[in-house]
Length: 126
Image 1 (tube, rainbow, N blue to C red):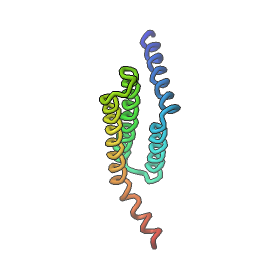
Image 2: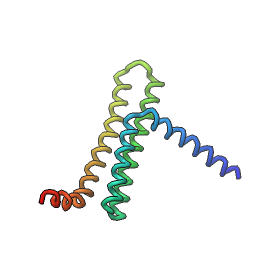
Image 3: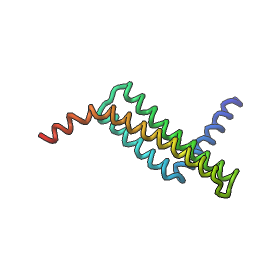
Image 4: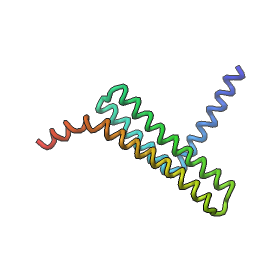
């Protein structure tokens, strides 16, 4: 029974952290909105299971990178509250990692959704 209590305690900490980023981090909020739009598109276009798995993987990758970015920003702020060149560099590098993951997710999204969108676009042009 103790393990169950520990699990729910850990879960509550994780949900508290998730609540923090949802409430305070604009980029995370924007990424969640984009994720919801992609999920709606997955349902609308009835993408294959494989495509769905890939899309969920890149969505979660972006959200995880944003969480790690937030963590690193807070740690750097604690360790080095004054603006130090390395503190700025660490923050910039983390932001770059989020950007690279976001670009990857856009590329994957384009590759997956273009075949679904092309017939609809051509039908509108007729």
